[in-house]
Length: 277
Image (spheres, helix red, strand yellow):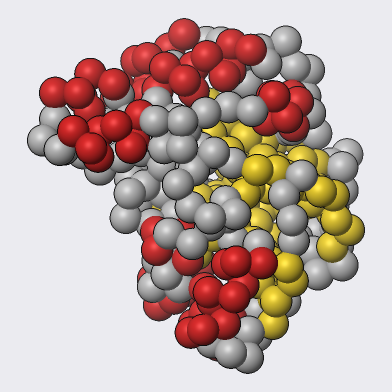
């Protein structure tokens, strides 16, 4: 397996078989969206920005809008689903989500093409040409879940919006190749910050978000994995975290031998391509 960064001069709509291109379109308190593309399909996890912003970023990063689009949704908070219905209408996207979230989205867009899934299950997925696992997340949103997506034997895991870590999360992460891991807040910044006590308790609670310390401890637990090749730290709070703090508290510790990147708040990441050979 080879992972390489695609620079702007290399952006092209041509993706070869057994190649997967991917990027973080944006992540943070204001919106979250992750994109993946193969030679035959385009898929996203969450679409928490206006559709026009998502489309502009997809184009600027060289992703193909003419391929069949599948959107995997994690939960009903607006910073994860803001653009879902408009993208589904404009691009006839298939939306994968929990029963509650599908019901919520259909109140806005009744003609939504949908696939209802349950947590802690495995599904084959013809729309992306691969498969995916679902797993329950500990968040203050009804039927909150997340995904490990697999294509060509390459496994991507999105682990954000969970206040605590469940045993199956370690197992799924251990066998993943690329991990998008939440590092939402620095505990010191949050405790000293302007948020009211009830909101601080919500963020730090079992159904809130992962802190920098929790993210570091998570990686410590799975550090002997032979599979993990790349880690992105995601969903940084606008007010209670900074890129330099995540780098200082986690990245510099070199817990894993693989590259680790901190995603700037609500800004698209670089584009990467993984090649199975």
